[in-house]
Length: 283
Image (cartoon, rainbow, N blue to C red; front, side, top):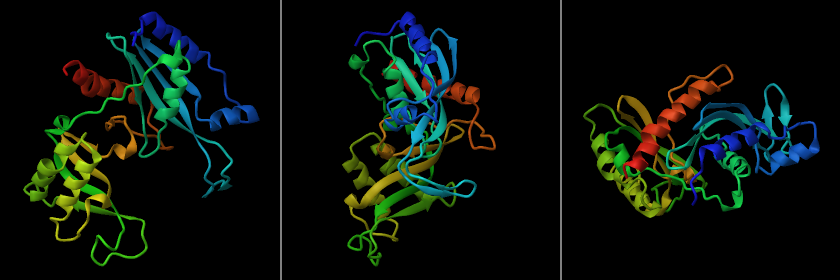
């Protein structure tokens, strides 16, 4: 893969600025949003020759719902949510993308597609997702483990016949709680490994609780809340089906529930430098 140059990065920024605007009153533009191959770019700024800050709007549609202010929102309507992002051109010629999420909401796939469509020879661009290994979390001190399990009566004694899933949370009661070492020793080391190994480790831990009895295949998802290096962190053992590594950003939100662009982008840059680029550079 040929490295990107500073000139190509500057040309990419120019194409981003020249993006054709979206008009939500025009059917053609609404269809552009429904394809989810492109999202509106806003607040674009080239901070330095290697760093671009911006905001993109991810489109959501296909599910009708009721809103306390607007009433019924139809499944045909397109809803846009803003998320901030950073593009960073490393010395290696790689372009790193940092994209903000709000809980389960985000749109990295749309952002990636938008950017890839503006790169030269986008058909030959390869996207490589980096995922940290368990060693990154060696200093993590678990506070709570949350496990989603399939609601099967054959696996949990006395469980209902309704199906679906249920969430089980185990929380430490003190700094000396044995749960801390059990999660640290028996679950976190499997981060980044195959889902089968993670399911087996999580099921084994849960079966020690005397509350439940589950099979490996019943484990649908697992999240560990922990303190690490003076900050709270969330370890997504299964990454919720996503390939991108996630980090908590220390930012505040406004009355609409959104963080400021500059604060968010600066935190993304810090996370990229500390947790991704430095890790890759040092093997």
